[in-house]
Image (cartoon, rainbow, N blue to C red):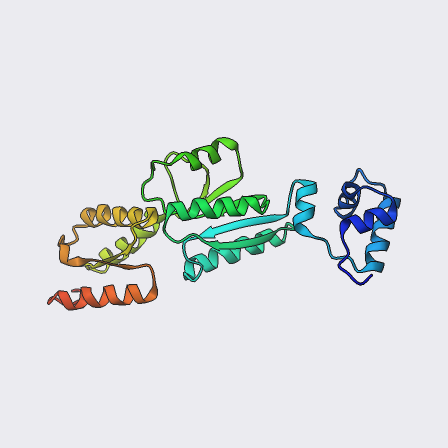
Length: 252
């Protein structure tokens, strides 16, 4: 055949419905082994390439998972995406990646686009800035619908969706306790912008632990920068140049 082979072509040739063909291609137990063998033989002969979107419409599932992150070039989210993709592939799923920036309306639009592609679920890191956020109707309806959505790197209290997040308080505590044990008390802190939830949680943990270990309190010891390598470098440079008291080795 000189044109692209379709599911309908396969169905007509074998005298079966397109639903039966789709189920046979998915090795569904409802379809007999004899029918599956006929389907496999013809698709191999005709070199048929399944249309995943069409199969998703017929079967009600796509074996696709959507992932929406603020910035896919961020090394952190690159690692997160790799982990999601590796885990998904071992279970027969493929992954679609999209950037949502740091805007909630942009995230809502990305979720709508992913759902229109019939993805089976979405992993997202929306730019929430509070543990008890005020969500608009779109997110509330999404929650109430039971659609499979997992928040990554967002720890809401109480949880609104399923969520997977890091234990930032423990990480910050280990750093502060290490510095305190070495005799440091004048410690600078660089926070990120925009101040999404993980940024706020880490800063709150640092301030709490800094007071506990009697770190020097001064606005000059705090700086902010964009969530990029360049932003961190520039913030560190500003912090260093603004304070005449440079770090020195602690007394042992």
